[in-house]
Length: 406
Image (cartoon, rainbow, N blue to C red; front, side, top):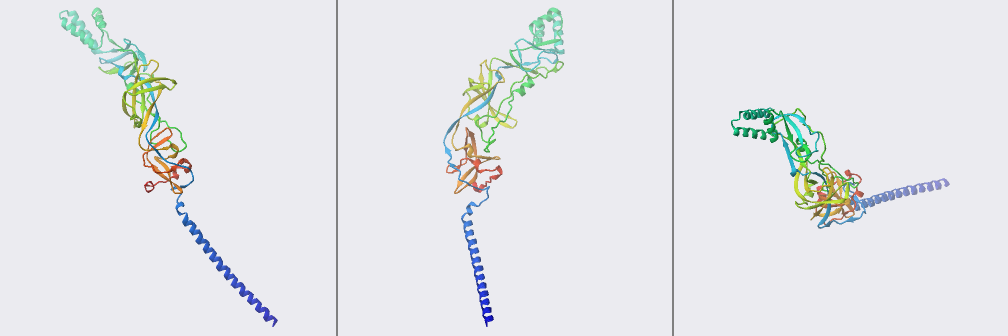
């Protein structure tokens, strides 16, 4: 009987254990299910914040509002002193022949009026001199003698040279060519190259992604080529044609300050406008002049404009670099600090605040000046991140879509 009692107690204990195990298992499953249900509820509440990182950014960075209205900036333009092409003169060969002696060795060599430039041998000129002597010795027709002298004069001979031929009876096989002005001589082929402006790109290093922005900056990035004293290409023994222009002489009475402008700055200057400028070597001493010519130029695939200021100051020399400032007026559009606009490739991007996140939005820029960027896109009611660089890890980070910009 004692054995039966013990067996009964064991069975009751096993039954209670089984019931307890089942109860714990059911409770555990219910708790787990409840936990899953609670977590799904949390995920649903932050669904709007769980977009890809390149589509929006969660941040508490301060925001700014765009500014509007007319603004006036001072834009720096670069230029160079060069020769006034209005005061240039050309030296041509009046006869066809061979250069026997050449006294010009390099471009921009100073010359004086009446200075011997070269000596040319011309069979046509020698024949014309023989004709003159034949008519003179005949002594029968003064009219024919006068025409023979005129022909030699048209071929480039001086009156004293003609009289010397008649006096001595000797033919001059070398015809001298003299400078017809005082100034600086330049070989004609070199003049074509030297007068053409050359473009040089200059950009300011930046750490906020705005490098080489498509819009204009406050400084011109174009300069003109400087005169260089290079050897002339014409050589003794070379043949020239009648009427061929060989040299240009730039007179030293006046010079030109040529300023190169980007198209967006060119619209801000007018003919007759007064400019105050200084040489890059001495910013304290200023010069003044009026813009006399505005000329659009296309060079190396780049469009720009030359503004020429005609000057007569003897202190300035060709080749000197100069700088000037012009007022630039911008109307319309919206303005943001430069650091609020991020440059990604050829796109300009700002971070617009939408609720609790910042969304990258592509905008169209017009110009950049003095740390501000003019925006053409309508952003009047936007709140944007004050510093776009804080929201960017790399340029590939940002992704904008047409739908986001609407």
